[in-house]
Length: 328
Image (cartoon, rainbow, N blue to C red; front, side, top):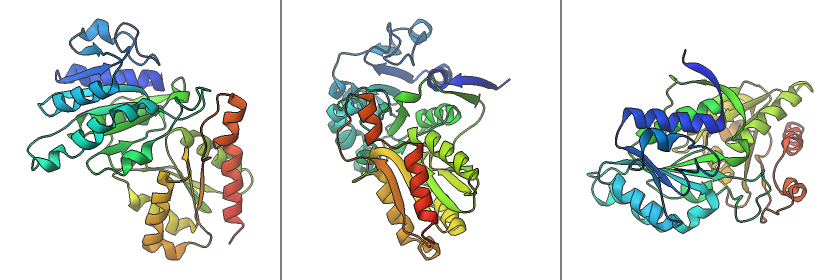
């Protein structure tokens, strides 16, 4: 059987394990990935199977980790880097943005840089301002990087395997608040980076969401269906390269668009999606403004109750959808 129920945590481990078994050039590096089994339990048991040469516990230096990974990728290895909290990727920016991202371009395509940077992103755990950022829009801005944000156990598994096989640096975003969430995973399902999916069909409005917010968006769509509003939920899965076509097609069908993500609203990737629709022929099909549901432009508080106030929830999504539907 190729289908089994997994948590997102297990799906990540299974995907990495499968790729490492198939390709001896794939290895994992990061803080506490060996004996400890990863800060979120995503690498438990991997040290015992693959040994210290392929499961590398590193010093606490994201700059050194990312630099070593980019360098080894350029020589033919396929490193997976566990950045742990996405906030810490700020320390690794030079190696990612100035080295890994432009290397193929600067060397005329002669060198490949197949490295995956795994980032535990977003709020929902009460971990406060230095451990809860969703920074995907930073990396969507940099040519040469691919950015993926899967939101289901199936996509977590399939997209990670596709990312490891890609010959470009990939920013792989996983929601830390959802590691324990379960779902069916077909281990034979192959994902093509750059392809989105319609997670739920609908005719009244398009809701684009990804990563941590996908689950809340689907729940909002389910509740709104009981009220007579049929929401089409589109999950881009890959942010760069973005499957603009699938969003355009849906907006032409529904005439309305709401975009939901958990990163800060100002400068968030939702603005890029809105701009692409405004520049496309789908714009003429819109009969209401494009709306964004996003995190507040403030730091995440440590209090879980305050955290709920500054991050989107199902109620926020439903209210914005109703606003858009009532504009027609």
